[in-house]
Structure formats: structure tokens, C-alpha cells
Amino acid sequence: MSTAPAPEPLPAPVTEAGRQGLDALLAGPDKALIGLDFDGTLAPIVADPDRARAHPEALSALAALAPKVAAVAVVTGRPAEVAVRNGAFADAPGLEHLVVLGHYGAERWDARTGAVTAPPAPPGVDAVRAELPGLLAGTGTYVEDKGRAVAVHTRRAADPQGVFEALREPLTGLAARHGLIVEPGRMVLELRPPGIDKGVALTAFAREIGAGCVLYAGDDLGDLPAYAAVDALRAEGTPGLLVCSGSDEVTELRDRADLVVDGPQGVVHLLHALAHHIA
Image (cartoon, rainbow, N blue to C red; front, side, top):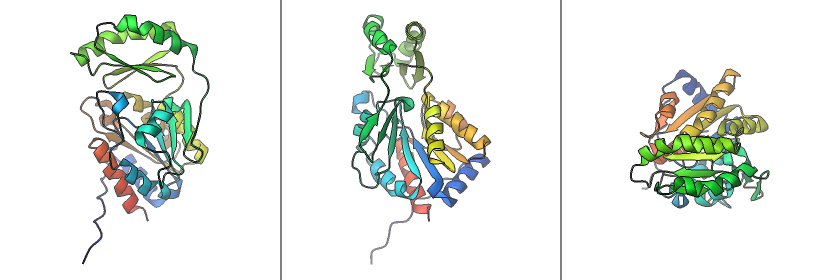
């Protein structure tokens, strides 16, 4: 006789605020917003960002959970279309209401329409793009052109951390001359417009849908504004759960998280477990 597979065990948050957030999610999933970073959270970090793909079980986990909650939003620094492609989100069964907030919320892709909406890119990005080759010559870095931003990856360099530190000051100066800011991450320095971040994007979307609780999972420094947004929502009375997709490269999120899981595999297990435990 065949038996149904055992439900995924649901990990326990280590903080009281996190436990309250999880309880609120399980009690009222129809009001729950699930916010997820992409690289390092839904997809493993790889040396070539163009080759990043969602974890093999990510789609099935999202499809199991998404119909049971108010909304699932992928909040990423990548262009929305790139995240959609790398995640294979387009036309995926069960993800008809998925939203991808790309470029830290400057772009939006809706699964219902398959369309991306975004304002024009600021002119400073073109100016920075033109100057970068001369500044980066001989560093062994890789430049990822995101359209509305450019990211300098040091992971391929002979000394990734040393090159990362050496480039912080000159890239910060270059960005400032053209009205941009530098966002550091896991062996990457991204030059992008100010005034947009994952916290702004997450808060705006939570208010748009009237979220009654918010789970956010991330792995990198760019996710700290989203953590701060969840903290602010908590202060207003909206329960939240902060999840860290564990990494030894970035400890700030681990230290602030209510729950730490083992990278994208752990995030997938958490999503499956939530889907199992929601009535």
C-alpha cells in the first residue's frame, strides 16, 4: 500500500517577533505576502550571473504555496525580465498572480499580463557604463549590465575580496559624479540610481494589497532595506517574519533574521513546509 509523503517539518523562528509573524501567516494566509529575493535565495550564487537559475525545486514550492496566500513577490536588483527568465516564472502553473519587482522595484512584471512596466533609465547609468572599462582594466572583474544599473562582480578575480575592497572608493566616486550610488553585495558593487531599494518596493506592494503579515527572505546586503521595512511594518502592527538564506559571506542578515535556513535549498524546504501546514 502506498502512503502519502510526510509533510515538510516547519522550522521554528528563534525570536518572539518571528514566532508571531509565523503564527499570523498560518492563521491568516489569505492576507499574507511572501517576499523573496532571487539570487542567493531562490537561486544559488554562481560565478557568472548570466548562468544563475532558480533552484530545481523552487517552481514546485512556489506553485504549492502561492495559491494559498495573498501574494508572492520576487524582489530583486535584476531586471524583471531577467528574473522571470532565470526563474522560469512565465506561464508557470500556480503562479498566475506572481509579481516580480525588478531593479529594486523600479520595474514590475505581472504574471497575469506578462508585461513589464518601468520608467525611463536615468542618464547617469549611460555615463557610468562608458567610463567603467578604463577604471576596471586589469582587475579581472566582470560587469553585468542591468539596463537601469551596472554591477561590477569581483568573484572571478584572482583575489575577489581584495579587488572588492580596492574598487569600493573609486566606484563610489564614479557613481557620485553621475548622480548614482553604490550598493555593495556578495563580491559585487552595483552602481544604480538612489531612492529605490527593496524596502521601498516591499512596503509599497504590501500596502497595495493590504497585507496582514509579511514574510521576507533574502541573503545579501541589498536585502537589509527589506528587513528594515518588515521591522517598520511590525511597529505599525503588521506581523512579519525575517528569513535569512544562510551565507558565510554576509553575516548582517543572519544576525538580524528570525529564522536562518540553509541557502536556496533551505528556502525551498521552508516554502514547501508552509504550503503543507496552511489549512
